[in-house]
Amino acid sequence: MSNTYLEGNFAPVRQEQTVTELPVTGAIPAHLDGRYLRNGPNPVSEVDPAAYHWFMGDGMVHGVRLCDGRARWYRNRWVRAPHVARELGEPSRKVRLRAGAEAIGANTNVIRHAGRTIALVEGGNASYQLTDELDTIGPCDFDGTLRGGYTAHPKRDPETGELHAVSYHFGRGNTVQYSVIGRDGRARRTVDVTVTGSPMMHDFSLTERYVVFYDLPVTFDTRQGAQLTVPRLLRAPARLVLSALVGRVRVPDPVTAMSIQRLRPGGGYPYRWNPAYPARIGVMPREGGNRDVRWFDVEPCYVFHPLNAYDEGDSIVLDLVRHPTMFATDRNGPNLGGASIEGPTLDRWTVDLTGGKVREERVDDRAQEFPRIDERLLGRRNRYGYAQGLPDERTGRPAVLLKHDLDTDSTATREFGQHRQPGEFVFEPSSPDSAEDDGVLMGLVHDRSTDRSDLVLLDAATLDTVAAVHLPTRVPEGIHGNWLPTAG
Image (cartoon, rainbow, N blue to C red; front, side, top):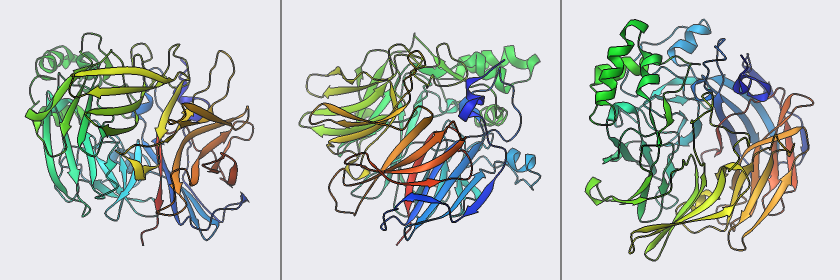
């Protein structure tokens, strides 16, 4: 059986590399001193194509070091979860569950905070601290202040430098956890928020005054969960137990630990579209608690990634990528690739805090994902947003980079060529106080004709190419990347 997420540029690479002094076309801006890092699933061993879900691949972080106008190195390293170390013939550490389950190496995002490089994942799995050269140090639990896993999508407040996050996993019952990690790398605040059941809450939104929760109809599937985590003879009673507990009360820690640890890397994914689950968003004041959350109904859909959010008088504006459904028919991945007839599209939801309603409207109807902004404006009103325009297999339209001007309701497009596939692009300003859109966009572009990837730098204002760093290999389609400046 074929599997889209094991073919083409989704196919895993089979070796780690370190290559120095990479060739460059164009001129790398002199102010860029740091690392571009990108994380994504990359199974360390052979997997069953019929069962494999993209989100369940072992994590591999790719990095390019830029300094003094040069591309000093490229590295790619698997995140050393215990089973990955064993597969690579290395000593594996004793599993500890304080930081979250170690069934899957962190495979979704990678950031730097409080001097640590951290590979991120969600759903109760452990995040991992890495060295500057991308070798694995071990699980990250923020100095013991945050237990049971973190998230793939923390948001850094541009004023305070703190990380805000919402974490979920099926063992939490009908709650998700909001947390604030201080500049010292330790959790200073956690709040358990009651939701409808056991949703997959991949991301959230943050404004200057509020935290916004997306409680949407993708939920833990007890049938799939039992099939993935329990021996065949015990699946029927295990499913009954899970059905009775999940989304209602906190699952006892031993049951949670056993279930998560038995998840097979490279296997299926235990979350599904649930049409019976109500779609709603919750609004909580930043310093509020569970009792302060107000809930607002929205049309059924799923949101992986908001573009941004901000306060506007007695309203909250949410710009986000809306999927009409998710994991309803495709059991191997998130339907990326433009196969969905309706979307995903860029939408705006305006939450009327006085009237108690949400107004939903379409901003751009082109299929797109991985929206990003100038992170200095996170939670504040922004003018520009950038997204990956997805390819359309029906028309042969290639993937493009979209630049949305939300003030003029216009969108500029940058094409890379019929055989070149761009991924997520991130923005880095020319200087700390430069204007919005004054800087570079950087992201990976895969060339199918050569089967190699480039790190491409664009002028954010014009979308013209500034430089291209030519990598010695291809970087498989991944999830998220970031520019991590060298600490001063």
